[in-house]
Length: 92
Image 1 (cartoon, rainbow, N blue to C red):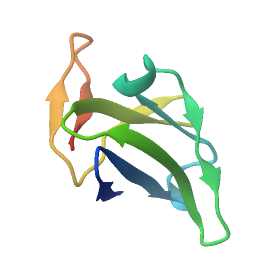
Image 2: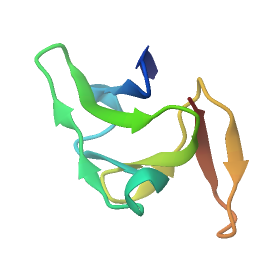
Image 3: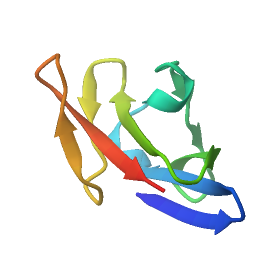
Image 4: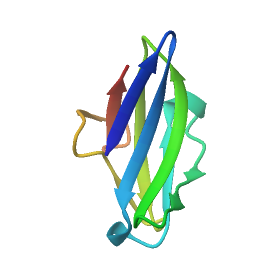
């Protein structure tokens, strides 16, 4: 799930996934050259990470679950990649 809060020229993006999805979740996106960033498990029972990104851009991203599978955000549009997988598309 993605929550977006816009302010002036940037947006705070909160990425969350339920803890039932796996033991370890990493977020990767086009905003930082696809560098993996670990999502923290919160007391609420969700993996969470916050990113601050520039408005007026489109970003591709995805979640790596336990280092074994790649998933998209089900609430956003997804696009096919050159690797025959899919990425989520975040337009802000």
